[in-house]
Image (cartoon, rainbow, N blue to C red; front, top):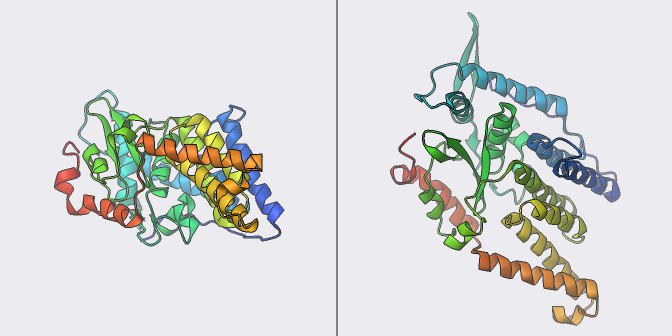
Length: 351
């Protein structure tokens, strides 16, 4: 038995701050060109660009693509079997979605010949450092494909990539600290796919977190579907956060640029607003410390600092008024486990 593995050759080079920063700038330019139609819009290429920047441009695209193709071949093979009982006009699309779900959440065995069997194991949820606080690669699709375990970032990202490659509609959606999949079926309407627990939860599960207000839903912060362009734009937030993990928070210009561009295409992106505001706050505090200022207002002779402070303050006000409430990590993990402990209450009975 073997797992189909992605083997990625990583050569980490620490040859200077400016060179490393330049790699992030190149990733930004590539994604921005997709958003401005200078290059084809591609979610997989945007995801790859963010991960490649972390590895100093040494992520192996050929190996990545070969592994992706292997997964697609398995999906296409099992989609020819009788996976679901469904008679809608979009049966072909729904069968492919069922095949993606099967490959990601269940063991798949394919007889190659009389002497060999290919076995693909399901992806597991990585509960250790689930938010990538200590190791940012925990968020990566490449890490998921290499180790067989991921989180609520890499799992839905891989699902979306596979759906794009199969040319079937698929949408990402946000919940507090969380990303999940929404798919439209002609027979049942929109339904949720949760890869962390291999279930199809109803919307009530999202609300059960206790951190999704009605205002947050009305204002598009949570539970709304992201367009293709918005999904790519949010990769810039991933890039900004990865940049902070590599270079710290002392120089916020790149982070703010990434977030500003993301917000042009997805104005309700909580992650973009928070990442930008937190970068501004850190910078202002560092300036206060370096200049021995007792409060932010003491720095307001500097017009740039004054404008940054006003913008940061306005962002926090907007988030609060839009219904955002910060969800502690321990509450998030309890919420994730709800689907395991109370499936009868939160799982969609139509699946």
